[in-house]
Amino acid sequence: MSTLAFHPPANAPPVSDTRQRLLASAIRLFGAHGFDATTVRDIVEDAGQNVSAIKYHFGSKEDLFDACTRAVADRLRQEGAGALIRDGAWRAQATTPDGARDTIRAVIRVVLQDAMRPDRADESRFLRREIIHTGRRADLLFDHVLGEHLAFMTGLVDMAEGIGDPTRARARALAIILQVVLLLSSMHILALGMGWSAASDHIADIVDAVYPIHQPGGT
Amino acid sequence: MSTLAFHPPANAPPVSDTRQRLLASAIRLFGAHGFDATTVRDIVEDAGQNVSAIKYHFGSKEDLFDACTRAVADRLRQEGAGALIRDGAWRAQATTPDGARDTIRAVIRVVLQDAMRPDRADESRFLRREIIHTGRRADLLFDHVLGEHLAFMTGLVDMAEGIGDPTRARARALAIILQVVLLLSSMHILALGMGWSAASDHIADIVDAVYPIHQPGGT
DNA sequence: CCGCGGTTCAAACACTTGTTTGACATATGC
DNA sequence: GCATATGTCAAACAAGTGTTTGAACCGCGG
Image (cartoon, rainbow over all chains, first blue to last red; front, side):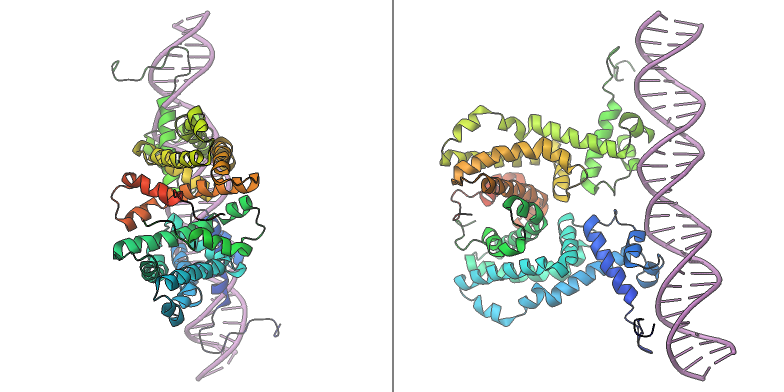
């Protein structure tokens, strides 16, 4: 018993395993079936916990959902594309149109790779569902994730395509980001139609589809 | 009373107004909030009918949803892009690569225009939600709507881009259709970012975005 | 040993869900 | 008139929902 059981540190808050398990199960189930189609009993059963654990650790089902949103956003900001955005080397490369274009393609590739990691599948699906479905905490996601990405991408696009007008550059950047998100959502159909067994083997093709090396015309 | 009330024909099935009202409300609410988030009481209240009317006219909530799917699919096949597909003139135009390319752009334009009609907004949203979310009757929609469109578009794409391989042509056609559907779903974000008050005024721009006149490279 | 704060649990609660019931109204055919 | 079919309605039903309760458990410090 003493070798396997979890022993929380003496006085510190115990980093309850229960909380993490609930979060993981909730992100997976909310992402797979949506908020309304997921019951709290589904979640606690999946996590091997009791129903009232949700009230104890989060407060309510809605609060649990909020916690999921924050967890996904935080992880993405710290480990995903967020870290990349704060990398000075990427910014240095983007001082010429060609460099900015390369950076855009690299960012798209990194985002795709991150979203396709098997151990990120659940959060990735949760994130996409919320963005597309504009779920209950779309504001939270925008503030914590999309906002930062959009600002970064706007600068890149402005430089790469010589747009000038900040509003149009922002719209163009938003269109690109949206395209990546939507593409990821329909990835299973795409892979099916393309005969790809693993879409992760064709990231280069997908990057080309989203942002070709030689962009057509202006707009 | 005799001037306003609805008088069903003597012996024929009365084309119950109730049934149509329920269908319209259901398509609107299912499309707006999804199956699980929509209660039968929401629907009957919106339609100004009684709860048990659903059982009487359709059988169950699921059956009502099926009826919605069929109604949307039928309408689209008869009045929407379906009619266009059976138009011989379009097929005649598509016998050269350039003609096929023009036809593709025209088809996209027609689909966009049809989906943006205010009086089609509810069915349009219902359809998109089901396709993206791959809801409970995705098979029905595929059989009645997507299948026909996909076959038609595959022929066009094969001719326009000289693909040759039927599988790759089919995948390419699927990607184009998917792009239109997804674009329509995120239209509100796009319009917001673009500063468009009415996206219907910029259909030409959207067609260009989906299928530019001068396609970049291969694949 | 005792009490305490943190944590878990089975059971129950109050409410909403989809569904069903049985009565009622109206119109049609004999 | 009478029986039947069609359609509508308020009320109730059983199951499922999120939430709450109160007791129990655990490791710790007194």
